[in-house]
Image 1: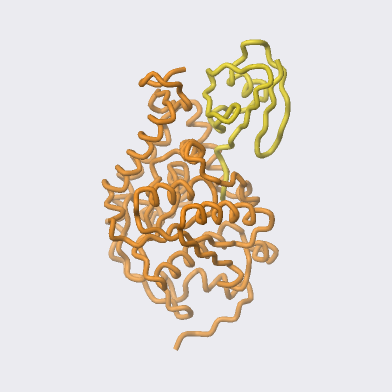
Image 2: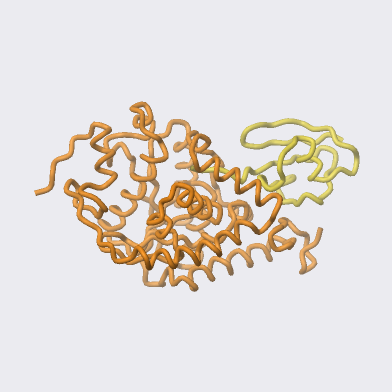
Length: 66
Length: 301
């Protein structure tokens, strides 16, 4: 399945196997889960939450400001 | 994944092995902030509080918490003059303050000191040094001039442990002593308080998101170059492998800095010969920078 991923510094689409979880997005993009929070279709989610075809993942970077 | 209450979890806090739903998270977060305020006697309901607000998640979170809990707050945004950065965050502050009827003061560095951070960098100064000195000076002078009794900032757990470790690594013990919890009453300074100092940066985002705060996630273009960035990355690497390290560090630093504060207490501040503000030497750092950056200053008297 394909999910779109958007963050402050990039946006992309990732192909994941059916039944993939949010943690798989971090893994596929080689990102550390601790350095982001994620909302999926506008709701905050944890790494164990399953994704669906067409899910829109927004990664909120922990580090911001000065 | 479920919260203890049975609702769907929205955040995992690895340092205490919890998974929390939106309601339980906000309740836990706010209880922690109240505990910080009460345990350290940071604020009274009678205080007039000037809140330093950049428009990022931390400062909007502290402004929101204080406003929702009926503290008397006024927001102040300092425009450092960093092209492509401050414009975005200023919009966020203006939106929030307008929606919540909170008075907002905007002060550009250019107006106060005759120079922006970008201009200082072009003259060879380190951006974080100039910015930090001008910010502290301006927050204090505006609070003093306008009769505020406290200055509140959105410094979080990550900021605190980074600052403490940086002071330790630079052998700056008097500065480390000033990181102690609570605040000191020092002539010439309006007390500064940090109600979010026990809140991880990550949780400030969750709090801002769940409260629909219009924060900007812009990152200061200079923040990647400093010593702080190296310390931040090191601490994040440790926390990733050993959750709870930052909380442990803060707790232990708090014990040490409380002892250090007693050691360094009672050293009276002098009066800056140029602006009349409090300082350690003959002139304050803000006046030193102002002079280096070409702003003419007349001596007092």
